[in-house]
Image: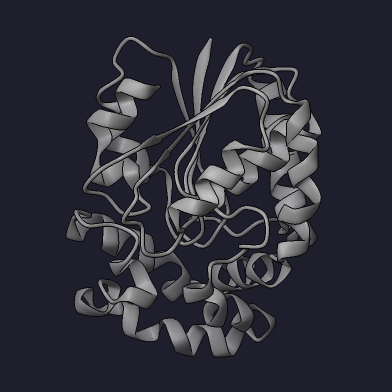
Length: 248
């Protein structure tokens, strides 16, 4: 039995530090995904798509021989979790999702300009340059509307790899260019086949993913409940780690 955590684009596994610290009795596995804050470029960029990364996650669960998994996803990590359970849920018994792309929202409207730049990596690089400075990282188009309480160290850590390494930037750009509502709309009806327990922790005041989206996502599963999380934006693992750890 293990708890496996999936993060989103332009962050790394440190997103989950505060939650993992509150689960000392659980086997916690934080997967580092190549979504723009990774430190080693991928060997085969053709796999840098939502389907390709989801396939890697399935294979990683097999490689580690993890069973009876509680799969936890935030932001794009929640989208990848949907793709994983639709592809192969044999090792997954529970799903915990915080605000994430779903249905016709992939990416959310606020970040569509950034994701569209994935088709032109040099343009994405130019767009990201201001993120070298902490004030810019707290703008709405960066992390300002994703979290209320993130510390400066994690902001610095998340933004550094893509700014320092052109190949990592290209990895992120390739993934961003492959994101589309067609993917999440296609996977939505397949979620009805997942019979495990699903908990969706969604803040009513989230400014990127409206709570109505969370309720619609919950309705796709046969055994899901939505828990409204107060005083938080999309990054519930940072804004309300106590609440999320208790739900897990």
